[in-house]
Length: 215
Ligand code: BG6
Ligand code: MG
Picture: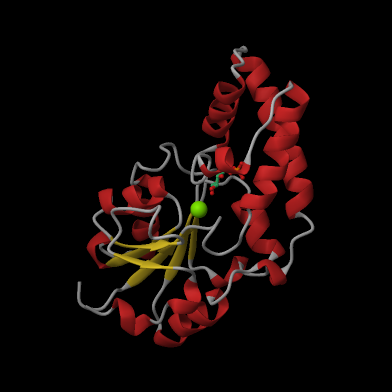
């Protein structure tokens, strides 16, 4: 790869820890529907779109309902989730993120967001990083969910950088696969015992410096 020319970041679990807010909202919905939704169940929803997440949750609860009812439940969950993220501030930015983004700015390396979340713009505004990104690709503009590479290919296109010169940071297995399908160098963020298929692994971005990406 030589020196990477652009970086693509997943949002949830890489820039901020929103999984806990998703979990609380999904658990409340499950409780209303009469079953328990555990933290282990929540792991299955990482990187998965809102509707696909709901389908997994309903499958866990053994519930079969119409598409119309599903839409209403997804909207209800999102309402509660949005209330939680409206309370977020910069203190919820994960360790190392701000330092690494500053390093990229200093080096003149552009970076984009590549997230499945339709709430990505709101979250970035809450944590004051919206204007820091050179491009934002989120759940509002993509049509194919990770592990499809669309989200990252679109990011590379907006930054006008060849995919092979891009590095992806991802905490979800589906996201790692999306990055590899896009032909990019992928850094898995989180527990290396759970994640597989990435080119490198870090616990969080405090372990990351640009020099580590120069091959
Ligand atoms: C991903 C999260 O980033 O976004 C998933 O990892 C979530 O857990 C997905 O379901 C969609 O998020 P939203 O905000 O559009 O409901
Ligand atoms: Mg994620």
